[in-house]
Length: 148
Image (cartoon, rainbow, N blue to C red; front, side, top):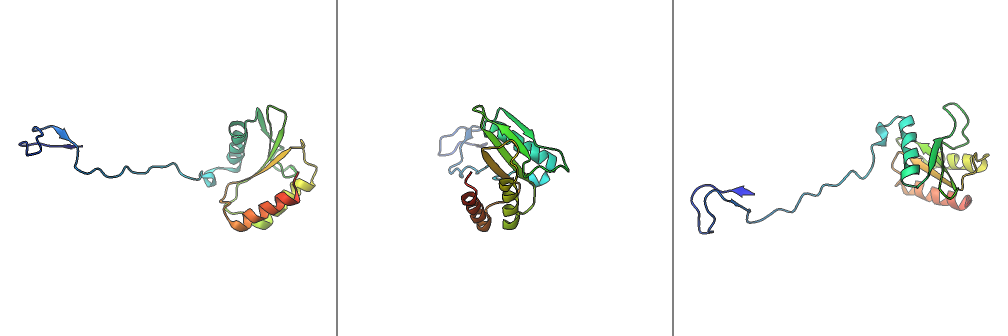
């Protein structure tokens, strides 16, 4: 808004009144960041974020880390339980980039391993950008290879 001081002009506004400008600019577009700054999190904090996603986004009633640092976790970092008893498994990868080879190795390690807690659904949670078409195609291939 513009405050006018002086003598009222032909527009009829009285001296000192607040009048709108003749043309308003479009409002600024302010959006939240499209990605989280996961690169600033420690691996422990990233894993806690994955647990929070299991609880608050996936609707789990319980979520816990699987194993401790240095133990063989068979490709499983977080286990969560839905209200209907469905078990979810999560592998948390806090890397700045992730390759097709790393993805294939990680998924196959879990799929061909002992599958602790026997999760019905397995999530690979990446802290890096996963929009690379090669990575997405490899993930689709792995889903066909391991439909269960």
